[in-house]
Length: 592
Image (cartoon, rainbow, N blue to C red):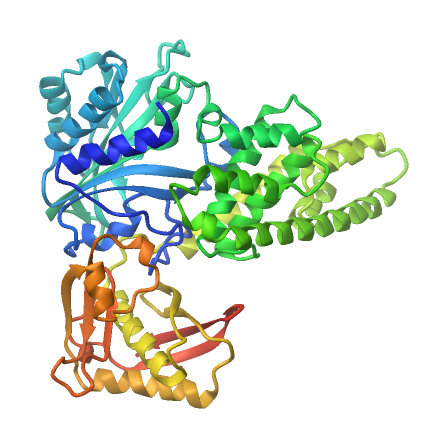
């Protein structure tokens, strides 16, 4: 069964179950500072999981583009990817555990033909705060017919889900399929990584809300969030040994192998395929390589692919060649890849050229450091090898090769210790930076979310209709708003925008919402930049009064949440205006 057939069967199955199909959101989260990239299908739906009504109703289905880099060192094995597609369906306060489990099981067995006797499941075994998920156990045994010996009880780390430090959460039940490999030992079970059990789906039951003081309250709106990984399902159905042998990667893999001079490094080929596929999708969603945040993740993926390319003997620049194969493979499903092909190729070529210069610097620094070694020294310690990696971006593989040419060895253990220490510091920094969590829908963020609507319209009135939102990032402390504009704003313009926003706050304008078709919203000239992310039905938020001579001050397609009246906002203050990228400016603002 081809991957596109799996996608279509999934959508058709749930549409027949009265779920509304919604398009994939961008990999770049909108108004969510807690994550760099969308890493699960539920991330774009957080406002609706928190209680905002979704314009398409309470039962939804989609295929969401996702990116995760926490397992980047595992990429190259049989199942791990950085970019992947998540088949997802949701109940927003409609059905709950029994229907959800039944839907997942029926889809796998009836539509995809997986064998019931090869399915095992895990359930939450309970802890000091939350009881065992006995209801899911009963459903699996009595309603579905999974025997007791194929139901496994796992702890909070495995089978309890929460978006951030606080917010909607609950137990989950996961489905695993027996790959046919022998057990690695008597303790082998679905949580084992030996390869026998392949996770195919995760049903999350959001029935609690975790408060700031650590208490779990019962949620008024109980939600279901279900995710099924397309790559792993395709691997199983096509009976392949790895996701890289499926039709999702086959053309890409052949293109890499054709360029390779060394043919015995399958892991390197897989890493190149994975990383460049991810890079293509990231660039298509507006991210360019840099040394910060999303741009740094992208740069790391591209440069890692280049490093592994050198290991298998690819001598010339090759990233754009592989990117063209990726675009050709996916453009029918994601048409924006073809639309943005020129930009994708340009950014990859530029980054590959920049990395070549970095490598040249690294080689010169290697020679300088080695020339200072005392006579008789035959080992390069971590204080030489790690700065080459950390400061100059010089791969340890190349350091090893150059060292061998000079009759030297690299202290691999010392390098790994330094590398792990570096990873821990980076991870702690990232956790601190993004600790707000997906569930951050505080009063402060809601106010700033509404203020962003006022800001966009004020910018358009002061600077002109060339202004469109290019991105935003909101925390409880501040608003960051990116917009199209070719030049630096003057102090007078900044003051004029700030005054106009505060004037609208002082006017105590009502904030109202209407649901309508996307076509109707466009007809009303509601602001909305990224049309492809919207479904057929949207929410339009209005700020102002229709009976005023000038009409509404702002009307914008948005998911929410918002305040009810601008008088709730307080005093708006712009604290910085700066360049974000070519043709894009950035404003940082607060509410006092």
